[in-house]
Length: 535
Image (cartoon, rainbow, N blue to C red):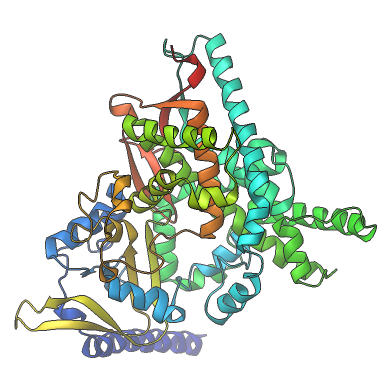
């Protein structure tokens, strides 16, 4: 027994020595010590807690402005090494484009991600991600998206009917504001219609604007996880796992259990695949949804493991849709409610199109080419409110990050044009800081759709894929269809006073709350009334 304890003690001491020597070697190889570093930092939390607490990514934007650079060093929590915060376009391009497979999501979080959403495209990394991307490419084409247009329009019209019914009920309860307008939570309603659309185009299934039992369970699990991420325990948990990764392997039911959303989606997908195979065997049905496309991609396999893999991809689409399209749609509604001129201009563009096409609804190609102000509004919302506000990556191998703007060593005055990093270096990218950079955009915090008709910042000030949207074409088209349908049917009005102001926070996902009311999974208040109710 004593010998066993001695061996464990020696292993512990050896591990600590190796850790110290490893960090000293890392410090000798890298030139991070010449970069600007945020002073102070809590002995336990480092700078990570204050970055988590501050809204609107202000910790990052403030420090980038403070140092006048697109890169700085911040102290890691729980005794972890320093973190490299980046908004420099050249460095970001290296991380996400030129050497993307060297930079992965935290390996300590991936086991939990797998249990929550399966082994789909969201979970995958490296060669697995590359092979999944290649395999999925035939599924996400313009032809496929064009075939989904009618389904999106049908969901949007159903959504308008549901809003009108809600307004009628509120009026019967005298819950309107005396002007025929009713206050709603834009994110709650956006989730209804995006869930309905992904049900139609993803599974060929009616999620009933989020009211179907399966939709309620999937969304409930998603919002429960989102809300937990914005609590102190939800913030602390990944930090502790990062410091002590063995926790992820502990045989504890709550740690090892699969997520509700994953289980529900696999159960539903399996049922739909079985029903579909029976019908298609008789030549009765060939669907255009993603479930059928993925099934054909796998050669109509009957193996449960293949069906589970298909289900994981569908779940990735569902959750990405709710985390991307729903949030952006809600912020578009909110922003237009506070910009009457832009709202009226967009409505006039839509009405002019309708008049010129004898009342016909815009087609898929019309949304691409004939509604320029709608397109500009969506681009501006994406710039201001990226669906992924914050990204963390870990370097698998040593690398050199180029800088588009050199950093000066404060001691020697020497210019640093690149940063040498070691394997294991954690990197934090604030997309808001990139997309609101004052040296790239005029009035970067203002909603100005017309900037997209003018000369854009040079490529050196931007980064490839800067919008941060998953399944970009699908999500943007979906937002355009629903937003245009809303604006044609309703007037969007602001909620006045402090109860109408919002701010956003990052904790695994971007969530938007009323200022000072960081509760639940978010709230985006607007007032809405039917256009026919306007005198």
